[in-house]
Image (cartoon, rainbow, N blue to C red):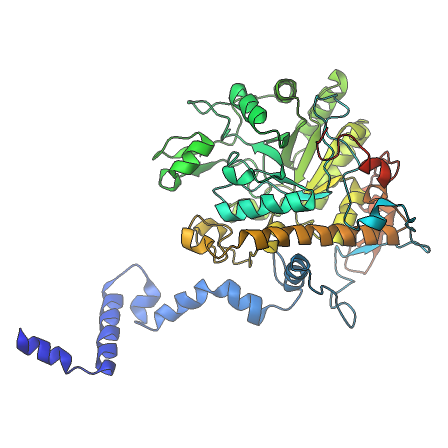
Length: 517
C-alpha cells in the first residue's frame, strides 16, 4: 500500500492531466452514442461545448444589431435601458433598413397635439389607461378599465420562477398595470398587490376537481378570496402551439405546484388540446356567461388565429343572442414563452399582424367591435409596434418576453430546459437567487412607464390625445420588395371602427379605472 502511495505522490501535476485525458479518450472510443466523440476523442467535446453556447456567441460576436431573432440586440437594448431608466436614445440616425419589408412608418401631424396645463398627462407622463371598459356592454357586476394599456401577458408559475412572478406582480402594482397568471393557477407570488387577470386552459389548473374537470365552485371561491382578480380569461389556444396539448411530468410537480394547480403528486398531468367544459361555439358562449354570472367579473377568451369559420360562428351567435366574451386576446403565431415543437412554433397559426387583422375585420363586419376589448399579444412591447396595433383596432397590449427581459432575461433560449441563467424561467433555487425582487419589480415598472411615455409622445406627434384615436391611414408599412409603402387600410383591406373617446380626463375620472369601484 505504501509503495502505491509513494508512486502516486511522485506523479507530477502535468502527468495527472495526461492520465485524465487518456481516460477521457478511452471512454470516447469505447462509447457508441456520439459519433464525433468516438471519431475524434477529446477534441470532439469542443464541438458540443461550442454548440451549447451558440446563442451567446451569435448574440455578442456574430449577429449584427438588427439581425437576431426573436429579438435583436437593438430591441433588447431598448428594453434593458428603459427598465433601468438609462439613456435609450440613438445617435447619428437609424441603422435599420427603413426600406425593408414590413417596416412601419407613422405619419406625424404638421402640428402635434398640445397638452393643456390641467391635462392629466401634464402631471403624469405615464398615465395611459385603456379607452374601453371590460364588461361594460354586457353589464357585468364588476366592470374593469385597465389602468395601463401595456400589461403582463400569460406566463404561469412553474414556467417562470417564484421570484420572477413576484417581481412581475410587484412591478405591475407600481406601474398600475395588470398581471395575467397564465394557466398554472393563482400562486402566492401573484398576491403582492397588482391587479390580476386569472387565466386557465384545458387543464383547469387551480379550478379543477379531482377528475381534472372545471369546477365553478373553486373558481367562485378563488374570486371571493382574492378581490384583486379583475377578470377571467379562458385560453382556447396560444401562439406557441395552437391546438396542441401538453404534459406536466410528475417529476416536476413539487408540493407547492401540486397545491396551487390542484394536481396529484408524482403523476403526469395532461393538458389536452380540447376543453372538457364545452365542445361547440354556443356551449363556449354559455360557459363564458355562466362564469360572468357567478363571479361578476368580465370574462374573455384568448386564442391564436387560423381558420375563421368558427370565429364567424361565434360572431353570429353573439349578435343573435346579445351576449358573449367581454374581451378577446389575440396571440401571435410567432410563439412566445411556451415551449413547443418547431413544427408548431414555425408554421401553425398566423403571425399577430395577419391574425388580428383577419379577426378584427370579421367582428367589424358584424358590428360587434364596440362591445369587445381587443388585446394584442405578439412582440408588441415597443412603442411604434404598439401604435400600429392601436391603429389596427387593438385596445390593450400584453407583453411576455419583453417583460421577462425587463427583469433580467438575456434571451438564452433555454426556457424549456430549467437552466435559465438569469433565474427567470427555472425552478432551480440557486439560479433564482440572482433575482433581486425589489430591484426587478422597479425595472418592470420603469419599462412600462417608459413604454407609455414614448407611446404617448408618438401619439401626440400624430396629432392625437390617446392611442385609441389612431386610424389605419396614420400608419404605413412596406409591403413588397420595390420599396412601396401602403397605409394599413389598403394593406389589410379594412378600416378600424372609431373608439368612443371623450378625453383622457374622462378616463381618469372613470369609476371602473383599475377595477376600484
